[in-house]
Amino acid sequence: MTNRPLVAGNWKMNGLKAAAAELDAMGAGYDSALSEKVELLICPPALLVAQLASQDKIAIGAQTCHAKENGAHTGDISAEMIRDAGGAYVIVGHSERREDHSETDADVCEKAEAAYRAGLVAIVCVGEVESERRAGTTLDVVTKQVLGSVPAGALAENTVIAYEPVWAIGTGLTPTPADVAEVHASIRATLVKQFGAEVGSKMRVLYGGSVKPGNAKELLAVENVDGALVGGASLKAADFLGIAEAY
Ligand code: PEP
Image (tube, rainbow, N blue to C red; front, side, top):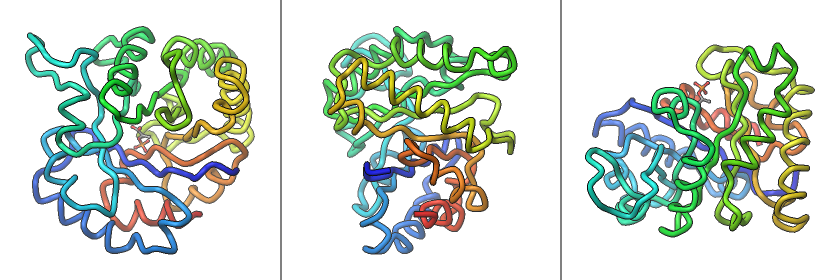
């Protein structure tokens, strides 16, 4: 594993202004030795992006964006607004967005393009549901999602892929390291074929789904795993730092 790893936290719809104290605790534990080894990112609810981005130890991002820069889209936020608030990343195509908001690969691709337009890094999420895993179609499903969701102009600098088996999110279940290795090798091969060896080999591919301090070492040591996207265990500084310390 040669790419600088990224451990990204997705707070989902959790956190009030007081959550700044948790971020401060994360920042306090993120010393120079750890920051040399791993990059940390927190994606809080959109309303907290500006407040939390006022510290400079941990990168801040958002959990989704609209594809358009502005306009009549009640309740949405644009990539430019995230950038203006101090965000550096945006997650696109999380399975909860794909499920709850019927987002398609084409929608996700447009959102990633919006991220590039605004100067954000897009974290593009892909992953199979349980029935697809059981049917043995995981690699086909994930390849199709990568090809449909990652824009043609993707670079290693502006794009991160997050492989998140949907059945592993928030369940305490994880694939075996061998299963993770198989999917990540397949994603890597797809990226190399689609974007060339230089870009495809450097684009970071995160694993997400029930990553905790107790299993992080094993999962993050898998070949082609360049970090983690973490939900529940990113809410508390001790857990989140415990995962980062696997490096
Ligand atoms: C997620 O929602 O992206 C996620 C990985 O959640 P958890 O870590 O709680 O499984």
